[in-house]
Image 1 (cartoon, rainbow, N blue to C red):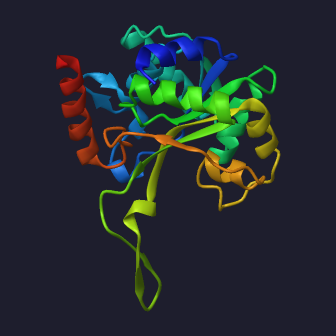
Image 2: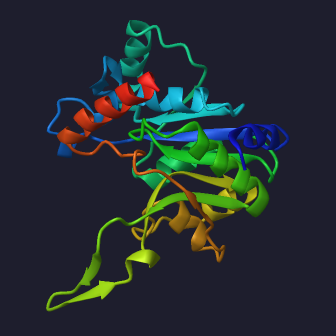
Image 3: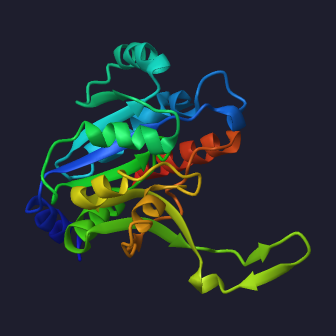
Length: 240
């Protein structure tokens, strides 16, 4: 499906939302502030992420889930950078699970409403990936962005390792998009440390997870070198 056809199809879907989860502490970045506030080409990572959804061609509402200790800092950043994209600011919880649940509780709509959940520190998500995620979730109930592994993969135990078939290995990204009815039911479950993302929470209810095409440029800012990579990729996009 072409991008124009995707946009046309998406416009006929139910109301759409994105929960952007910004709960990182920045420990692995060796930074004084959480990684979502670090600058990429002069703008905080989180603002690039919100711009990606705002400019995606999908008419959606943004819910930003942020630790309450950083709400005032976020307001200061918005003022400093004249950042005026409309969004609802919600307090984060003890874990990512609880933060997503808080964001979910702020969204009103019927069971067909589409809700994407996205990492605040994935600022390079393309419009095509976002559009594809909403479109597929609208048709199939859920859509989890992923890419095939480029590397050989082995599963290791304490005493040996076993080769896995690379063509069967997918690296999961965000956005992960669901019909509201599925997502709300999933988040009625008690928290489990096995819940590593929203797909794992929904899958626990017996739902088959649908994968959609991601991009190797849809990187997650985790380590200091990721900032330099993101800056290069953003400059590349600006020249296209």
